[in-house]
Image (cartoon, rainbow, N blue to C red; front, side, top):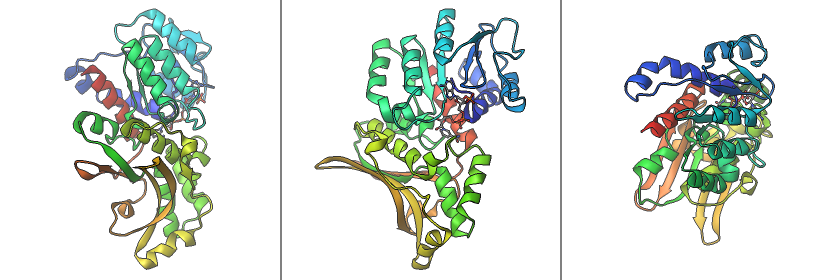
Length: 342
Ligand SMILES: NC(=O)c1ccc[n+]([C@@H]2O[C@H](COP(=O)([O-])OP(=O)(O)OC[C@H]3O[C@@H](n4cnc5c(N)ncnc54)[C@H](OP(=O)(O)O)[C@@H]3O)[C@@H](O)[C@H]2O)c1
């Protein structure tokens, strides 16, 4: 569900890693349904040629439903119909990959896609932070009731493990708070502005690479980072926070001069996402902050991200992703798929 930059990179990665996926994990797969918003939706029990689907959507800008995908393909009206039709086929073990556009207000329609897929008996893997930021508790309850699994490693910091790291390797540790740089587009823009590159030029580069959100104001106004902050609070700290509950200032009003000025004082400007549990509950914010050069967050170049977890037993645990991007996000979908298999 969603066949944009991330999903298309994912289907290619599955092919590139097919030996490992088949041999080591014993997974044989078929793509039996694809849903998009403007490029058609279809289901095919015999399996869809995902490479051809990529060509139809990207190169020809055409509709999957009208394209010659296969003789047995059936067009559908929307994502919900694709999920229902795929369910009716009764696959032995189905997974819905949710990679539609981010909505920071209520996580829709992605949250409804996740809910419908879990209800239909599919496990769900998503790179979309909207449902985790806006409907996490409710979706976990649906997954519990239906005995299915909802995984979303790619929702924060692309491919490096955050959610899976804490879930799998830090039992009995309490995350008291965190701070980090979690939005690649704005970190790239701040680094470029330090070098005197205008804001608009740096942003256009991130859009050209498919890294910026479809609506880039979500990045530059801090909404993407706020959604990730809410997701981290909900999953790692057991909170119930929505993106609107995160105090937020973006980078849109900053100039190259403002980005360069802290360098003279041995500091750098970073868009920092943070949360901490205090006596009044969890307080979270996203804002441009000057950090000393010795801070790990100051050392992040370009699209790099980092998250520093503050824990009760281990003190600070820092996770750095130096190279973020589409391959890393697609890899997060793959890791979730493989952990479902395990
Ligand atoms: N790009 C990254 O580096 C990155 C990294 C981490 C996480 N993410 C997250 O991954 C998700 C996908 O990102 P992307 O870069 O692949 O976005 P994208 O290129 O804009 O693709 C979004 C896809 O979702 C489809 N879509 C939107 N609304 C839909 C609906 N109601 N029903 C069915 N399909 C719908 C779009 O269809 P049409 O094309 O027909 O409109 C498109 O195929 C986003 O939630 C993003 O926040 C992205």
